[in-house]
Image (cartoon, rainbow, N blue to C red; front, side, top):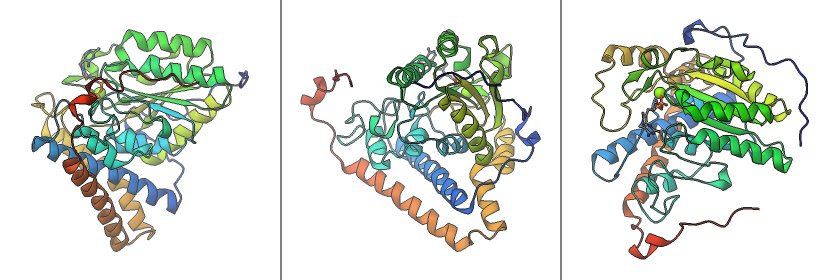
Length: 349
Ligand SMILES: Cc1ncc(C[n+]2csc(CCOP(=O)(O)OP(=O)(O)O)c2C)c(N)n1
Ligand SMILES: [Mg+2]
């Protein structure tokens, strides 16, 4: 087990109030930029397709799209190694794809088919892949936070150096169980990175309307948990902060909080009248801060990729997404005899 070191906490050297106030961030290499572009694009195209399939009646139940927030999960993933664990709420398709789960299995779960990750019995909010380090997919707001803390506890108990990444929203940050988890995580110096995806709204309620303290990076202050506020629309800034936080945890210093300033372009779920914000507000973020466009622009500007190279990447991504949609349409639904299977699991040793 890693022994806690009495080190100085990582400083919140960059703490912008708005993403645009962020200072300079370390650049990605050409390869990292191309791969971040491809990974973010895959999430975006997958989500657009999921939205279409929902509209066609192929997906039932709830479906929460991640469009706009792609840089958060892709940048965080760049700091991980095999064995690290990821857990999140219901806005979870992007996290699955970033963890390397197969788009076909994810889409087939959305349509409730046999070869979906939960064999068609979990749907959008309840998919897992222990093999890829993805632990769900949870519909109860904030419920993943004690579970993610448990994953961190398991790493410490087993004496390995795996880190647990627990994602939750600005709304979830007001749940009581979050603070019970923070207390335990700090008390036991657990390797837990808490990533608060502050997309500024919890369903139709803006952060300012619901939170006494809107600087969510300070939410661990009373437990002595360091926090940083990060431009979650800039994949470079996310990766940079992710590396600091993951190293901090891996070295046995206990938990850390990263508040990601981000934005969701689509409604909360598939039925959202969106009366709580203006179209102009959404358009402004899309035009000025889009995470994919930022990388695209740099790739072209620095001649790290030509328009043609990017078109080829776009086409490959579209093919993968179309293939997943096709698979999720023809794969059969589970047989009725499967109703009572997969209810209990043998505990892993
Ligand atoms: C315990 C609980 N309360 C309420 C709900 C209904 N609900 C679903 S999502 C949501 C908003 C959460 O917002 P946030 O944490 O900001 O995440 P985001 O949807 O923005 O990703 C609410 C209130 C729920 N699922 N669980
Ligand atoms: Mg939110």
